[in-house]
Amino acid sequence: MAQDTVIDRGAGLALIALGANAEGPQGAPAAGLRAAMAEIARLGRAARCSRLWRSPAFPAGIGPDFVNAAMALDTDLDAAELLAQLHAIEARFGRVRQDRWGPRSLDLDLLALDGAVRPDLAGWARWRDLAPVEQARQTPQELILPHPRLQDRGFVLLPLAEVAPDWRHPVTGLSVASMRDTLPPGALDGLAPLG
Image (cartoon, rainbow, N blue to C red; front, side, top):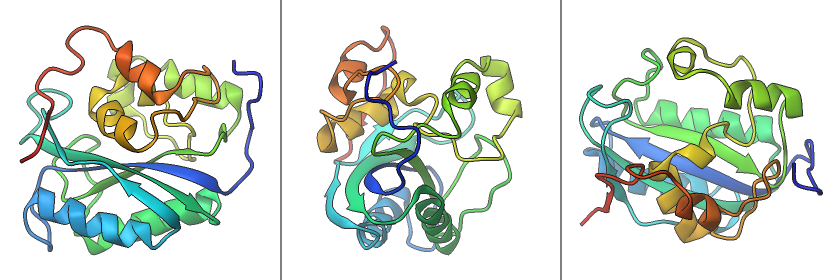
């Protein structure tokens, strides 16, 4: 565990992943992500946006390819307030929460808020270590920070490295760039900048 782990400080640097693989009110997934970025930027200051990336649907075969991106911004909102705002943006963009990993017009994940670990280290570790088959069946009833699989997903780490390469995971101490560079073979297959 990183020496300076903050269990939950509240506001600070927010890292947000964006994804879509279905049309929404704003049109195609790329248009939807661009519009969502503008709305998310209003939730804080000094917003940084990655390029848009095309990535294969996860898990494989569940639907059309995704368009993914990441944002970093400074915010005064605490985790619960920020998550509520992100869910409100999803709803305005036509997101209906039905299938855990099904097609969606907009998916916004709060990846991290500064160095917060939520609900606590044991709770975070439980979700990080959840077997893949259980990941599809179980949904946490509370916010888990940092996102328990942030370090495993190329489609998150590639865009995130464009906006916050030096951010350090509060449990592992690894930077975003380090996590990206140590992904296993195949984790970046099919990922490419859009356009």
